[in-house]
Image (cartoon, rainbow, N blue to C red; front, side, top):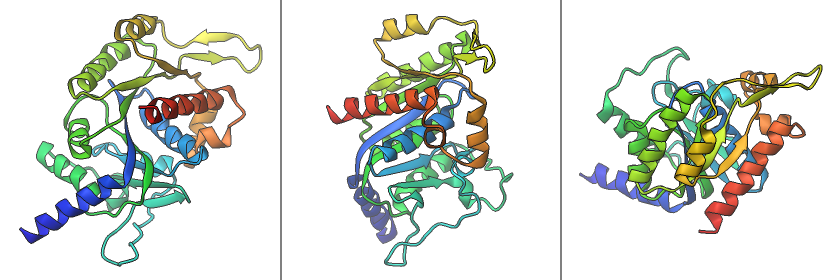
Length: 272
């Protein structure tokens, strides 16, 4: 009982350190959700915010690769009794289950209760610093992980939805929007990823997907379109190197659009 009381005390203490909490969601996989989460976190840090980035994708964690922290052990706090998230910048730290696994191809074959307990442990068994923003990268869909995150955080400032223009992706993201509404969490907006490709030789713009229903969705739900992003080979290069696209390619249109989305999010959250 004493141990449980200590964990609840740690949970309360960590939550009190977090000013703003944002959950990044998608209806289906493969739309670039983790890429968006990483670049939103970096963008906030570049705006002078102290940021934490949490990987809540238990079965398919990718933030260790995207943040270049594979194989790096967790630091220990000054008291020497608790691990802390891994710092990648002076004002950006990351916590992902991937760094707890013995090998990068190790699989966690867990049911709901174990996943929910692990997500809570991210806040009871680690010591977080004072944060302006916590960005949570959730797995696709509306299952155990996003539910556990929202219940554990108690208050979430908003969700950011990531989708592609594909009609199938939009059908699925509608479910995530409905989930957010049922959990009484505001939807801060949608980021439409891989919308088009600009030929580097002739500058001709080609749409990647045939879908065109995102305008209907935005109008129907009264949701802001935070950014429309092009398909850019540099995204793959940056991701494979564990680098932030918004930083390394900050002069490119996509990176500028991402930073504009970051500023929109700051304005929305901090005006509440």
